[in-house]
Image (cartoon, one colour):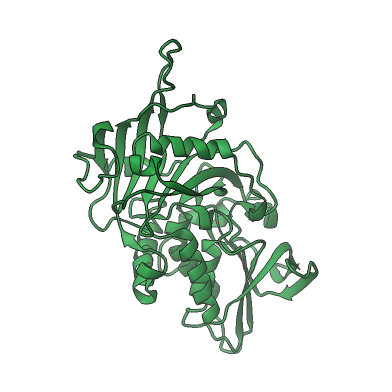
Length: 410
C-alpha cells in the first residue's frame, strides 16, 4: 500500500467500459486522495465509441471467466442501486432463453460473404448446460407463435440482467469525473519507462493535434482490441461484429434471446435450395428498442481508431431480415442504427481476459474481454483499483488472468 506522502499519477489508456470502470473504482478506492493522486483517462476517439457503445449489454451469472463474473454481476446491481441505473442506463433483470423457430422466406438468398462468419462464442459449455426445455414465455408475444418450434430457458430469476451499453459507459465516465478523474481525447503513441518502471505517457491531442507527454507512476492499458498497439507483447486479436437497433411497432417484453432460425432461401420453387440457419441474438431494451447482432468476421483488419470502423450494409441487412423472419413487430419496425465494432480476443489457448500486473512496475493490463466486456467491467475496474493501491486483487481470485502468463515474451 502506498505511503501517505506518495504522489501517484495514474493514466488509463482507453475510454471503453473497462477503462471507464477502472477510473470509477480508482477514484472511489479508500486510499484515493485527489490532493496527491491523479487519474487521467485518455481515449483516442470518443468515450464508448467502440464495442462499449455498440454491444448488446447482456449481464449473466453464467458468463465467463467464472472467477470474476460473480463479483462483476453483483457490482452491476450495486451501481444501479447507488446511481439510479434503472433510469440512467436501463438496468433491469431479464428473461433469457434459446429460441428455435421456422422463419418466413426472405426475398434474397444468403449472401456468400457469410461463409466468412465466425462465432462470437458467447456461451460456454457450462452455459449451454443450463438450457432447460420449456414453453415459450407467454409475454414473448412479439415473436410470431406459429413460427416457434422450441424454446429452452437459460436462466433462473436473478441470473440475467441488462444495461444499455452506451448509456452505462458514458454515465460511469461522468461519475468518475465527478470524483476527480480527468478525461482527455487523444491517441496514445508511447509509454515511457525509467529502468524497470513506467514514467510517462505520450499522446497526440485530438483537437489541437499536438503531441504531449504527461508523467505517470501507474499506467492501465484498457484499449480493447487496440491494446497490442500500445503493448505489443499482449496477444490480443480483433473480431468485427455487426448489429442493428430496431424500434418495433409494439412493446416488447424483457427478454434476451439466442436463436436458431431456419430460413427458406427464397420463394422460387423452380430453384429449390436448402434453407439457411441463422443465429442472431435479439435483446429487447427498456427504451422501446430491440438490439440484434449477428456472427463476427475478420474480413477487414482493425482500423486505427473506433471512428474508422467500416460498416458492411449487407451484413446489417442480413440481421434485419433474419429477425424480421420471426417477428412482425420487428419486420415493420424502424431501423435506427446499423453499426459495427471490434471485439478483443486473447490469442492464446488459456483464454483471458488479461487483468493485472504486466511485468513492469506500474504497468497493468485490463483487456481481452471478448463479448463479455460490459458484464465484466465493474469487476475488472474494482480489482484494477486494488492492484494499483493495494498491490494485489482482493475482491476476487483472478490469478488465472495474470497478464504475465499470456505475454508473448514469457
